[in-house]
Image 1 (cartoon, rainbow, N blue to C red):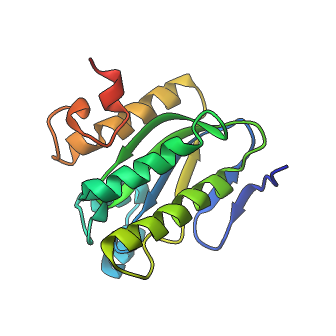
Image 2 (cartoon, rainbow, N blue to C red):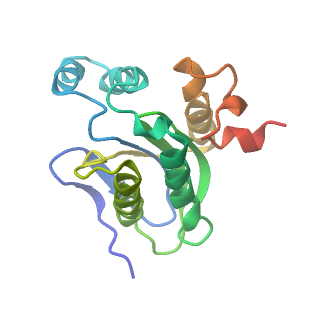
Image 3 (cartoon, one colour):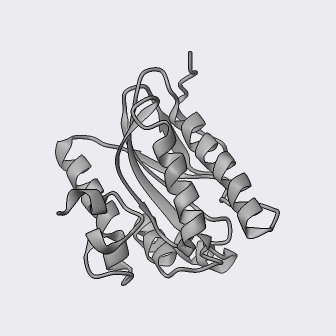
Length: 183
């Protein structure tokens, strides 16, 4: 049985870990935000909007823009879909990942995100012939308050590559749930 922590923090961001909860999760590559960008973001009143803007600028090595790396990360997201969680929406950007996920049974969000990051870091570092930190140590999560919040969040996730100027429509982006929705 999983240990649910409710509201908790490891000294970075607050997290909410609870069974049967729908969450919006963002995790990013370790080099996606230089120290100067983080300091700039902390000085802003709307931290999340500025964080989003900085991530969409495509800073860092952007390893997720390589098909081989994006594919292994997407496969990891699919691996326990419908067993530990239900993927409701996702998008792999060049330097970060957005996931909308419904936790199932007694599985912990903290452990699921850790398993994605741990497995894919090892695989990606091998593929890239590198060592060292791949993902940033923390992740951002927000639970869905209601159906409208869920709908708007999935729309945001799938529109992210369009907003960042990477494609014209969400369905054109190869690494997103939008390609399965639009016919």
